[in-house]
Amino acid sequence: MVQRIEEILGTTITEYTPNAIKFKGLSLETLQQILEEGYTTPSAKFNAAPSVNSCIEFGQRCQKQGVIPTFDGIAFPDEPTPDLVIDAITVVGVKDLDFAGEFVRFVWGCDELKINSQQLYAWWD
Image 1: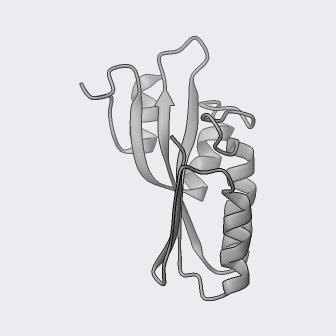
Image 2 (image 1 turned 90 degrees about the horizontal axis):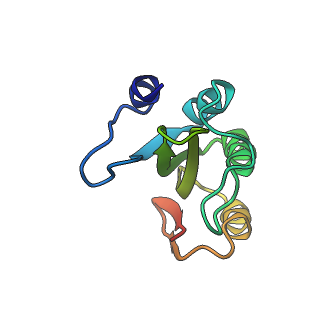
């Protein structure tokens, strides 16, 4: 199971994260695949971050707006029930300020928020 999730994520367990896989830039499609393959659950979440299901739903809204969401987080493949959680989201290609407002509402309560003309970013500690 560990090998398969490492293949999907394109990264491996390292000394820095001895029991987990830290990943960056996960696409919406890959996040959906991970959920479908049972490496996480819809309700899995990290601290105050939105659940996996909420991230997928927001990612789908992003795509309808023509913008690209990517997700960062941690996968725990060796747990009795493997789980993957999201701890950051980046959205690029935003041209509509109303959508930037929707992003802020979605990430409300995050620990770090960056909004500029290139991207929207939120991170939860």
